[in-house]
Each structure stands twice: as C-alpha cells, then as structure tokens.
Image (cartoon, rainbow, N blue to C red; front, top):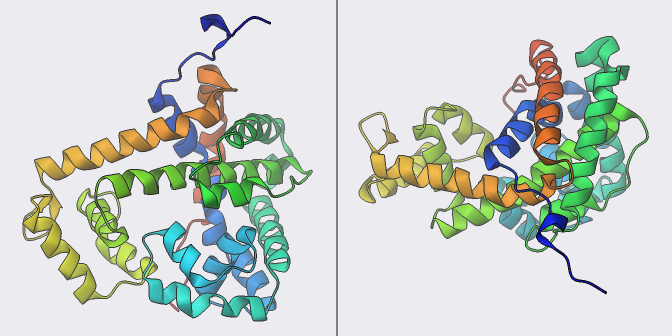
Length: 294
C-alpha cells in the first residue's frame, strides 16, 4: 500500500474565496432569524419573542440548559438565554421546534424567491453547499454547535437542502470565529463593541439584539479604549483595533476553509455566483427586516 502523494491532496483554496462563498449566500440562511413565518410557528408551540431564537438555534443540541448555549452563542447577554432555556422545552420538544424551523424556512424562501425557489439555480447551489457541508462534517472537533446541526437529517426539497447546508456551514464558520475571538482575548460583549466600531453595523442594533444595557456597553467601550483598540467620542477602531479585527477575520476564514476542500476554488466561485441573486431576492422581499421590539 502506497502513501498519499502531494498530487492526492486537494489544492489549497484562497480564504478570500471561502469568505465570498459564505457571504454571498448567507442571507438565504440568515433570514430564518427575522421572518414572521418562524415567529408564528414557534408561537404556535408556545414559544414567543426572543425565546424562539434561542430554542430554534439550540434545538439541534437537544433539551439543553442555558449554560452550554451561553458558551456557544458567545455574544448574547446570559440573562436572555437563561430566560429562554430550559423553560422552552417544557412547552415544546426540540424535535417539534426543529420541524417548525424547517417549515418556516421553506415557507419564507418560497415567499422571497417566488418561482425561482424551484429553479435549476437553487438546485445547483444546494448541491454545492451540501457537498461543502458534508465535507465539513469530517472536522467536528472543537465545533459543538456545528456538529449538532451537521448531524440533522437532510430534507428532500432543493431549497431546503440549500438552507440547511448554509446553516451547517454558518455554524462551522461561527464556531471557528468564537475560537479566534477567544484567542484574541475578547469577551462576547467586547467583540460586539469592536464590530460596531468598525462601522459595519450600528451599535444600537447590536446592543439591542444581544440584550446588553447601555451601562454594560459603555463599560466595554471604556475597557477597549483603555487597551488602545478604539478611539474617539463616537468609538471607531484605532489602528491597533483594526489590525486585531482584520487578524480575527483572517483566522476565521482560514478555519472555515476545510469545509470547501471538496468543491474547491471553482465551486466556491460558482456558489458565490449562484448565491448573489438569491440573496438579493431575499433582501428585496424584506426577509431580513428586524422584527418588532419585544
């Protein structure tokens, strides 16, 4: 029996292509956290408001308590999680929540994509994304939230295959991102403040959706300013802060690349090409609009 040669190894993929493949299609997954189809189905199970987010995303783990979810979700105020879990499991089983989530994803994508939901582009994107997700499944170590989602059975309809595959890839990337943040010495709240200081997402949205008070946010701003990572009255990244954030994002991209080895650079580029118009349709249909304040 001969050993593997250099030619047997998959060609290295530029992490920038991996980022492009993820970002171009991300709204097709991310809409599940905003659409009324999901809120309505969770409410029918007796799970309302923010509790639906925590229960639906954590349901793949089983009837888990708050502590593991606080650890894995990383940047949410722990009090939000403890208010939601494990109480949600007294109202609905994880299996029922997962079924409601999948039904909501199918209904929302049908609304957002229209006739294209059954088109060849969705089927091709689903095939590529599933191949990447199944490749990622060979690398579960250190990625508990990903591993739970990767173990779920696959649906049959292509648009749901696409949504589930993108969900799995998102959690693969997310677990790697948490590792990069921890290595950088950041708490979840501090990571949010740096994100806001980058100018990508307004601070009030990040603070509200993750449940932090103005006082807690201000405290983190002060700590990061003292470490030289942000500056200015309206906090922006300092040169040092920008370098740290760029390093975290680069590490996240590198940690995500094993998932895309099977589809390679060409597959990444094609997934991005297919994902862009689907994501634009999702955005245009309002599927990423924040729900009313609860």
